[in-house]
Image 1 (tube, helix red, strand yellow):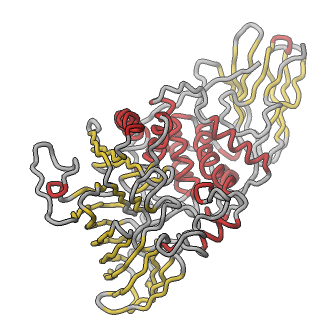
Image 2 (cartoon, helix red, strand yellow; image 1 turned 90 degrees about the vertical axis):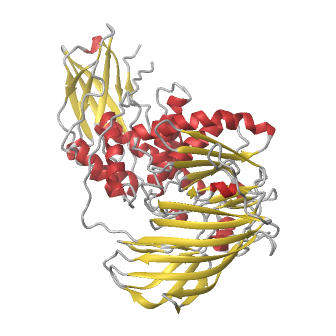
Length: 616
């Protein structure tokens, strides 16, 4: 017998504001002019960077990321790829060797500064792989500003991972991680992580970018185009006469306010469509003029508008007036105000990847946690909310839309390869372990939190979290404290066990005993991780009721998740006690079955003993 109730996720709108007055974050303003040679994929650029030191510390050194340097034989990315037991197949040849290792000189990527001034004075710097170490001419005092003027040159690598030229679908330029990017300095210090595999962390600021490129190329990406009347290509207002610049090139001028990254993509065969979300931003779609994909990309556009409305309702309003969905890259990857996705997909897959990457606009590009240290916050929260969106917008009708996340997590536990979610994103032993920890276990953090505090309180928590921490760098403690404020419960135990250990949840029904006109139920805890318990009892006459055993260390209880059923709140279960008993005021003979967690949102790793039925 399968007894199952799906919890209704209530979509709650709230607007609550509370911010720690001791919080600070750095600020950058980039002004860049870049010229791209589409014949040899080399580019030159100038960068003026005004850096504001809002920290309480004096800084005598700064760091830049030079991400394209990863795409060279012998780089840290290359060597890690050659040694990880389960390398990313996108980065491997058909002979299962590193694609980076085989790059020729004209195929590699690089970013090399050729001069760097601080307030007009030369500074010393050295490239250390994908990081530029800069010894300042003069320290930047707390509260002070300084201006860096850099000249740099770069080469776009063959498409290997996320960025590059000539991807598998023929997109000419996927330009992410393409410029010298200032590393983040926060309350933990500098985050000058080398680019080895995965995630990013950036400084909030404003970008002013001028890009000169062959006039046949269509460009899209982060920011608002400032000169559409000179560009055309579908960016100009209807009825506006385009006055294109003379010569073989065009200069595209973009501004992107309040972002922490800037991406662009370009191809001479891009089609460009737009769609305005009702009372929302303008959506841009750039995709190859390929008869096999055009129909799906046309159908994608109204679905993207639906996704935008779903996320606006359930997280908070998207703060920009533009979002671009662009064919490129090597799968799907989120960027400020835009995404790169591969476009030769079945329709549901195309919607699915768009849903996930668009959701990152909230969970990473507005709520900008440090992905390298807490990758589960952006990948997991994005997986959670995009899963809900797909279930509604694509009418999937799943009772438990998160079932795949739970299956992935259970497989990871059974493999014995799990590492704590507090592991740095580059330091997982296996790509498999990283992916499940970040995406699946990260998603379960929220769906299971809804089991603990109630689904309405979970959605209220997400909206308050967004309102309190947008345009900031939230940490795991921030989402935990938000949930505590909304629910009135203490949740430190949950954050600690779920994210900082590999402790597992494992409860069971040990024994059901007749005691005259009553029935005694004995439960046991076999896993180290504590949880409250919802217990469903089904009777032979078809009636049902639930019992609820709160966890003592929560110091609170959730509302009845099944208001159509009578609920009995039992005494708290202290975690240190491995067993627990309660009584049902009905005889054993009247009971058809008992089930722990009918919602199946508690990640119990061994559910064989979660259901009791009388022997035939």
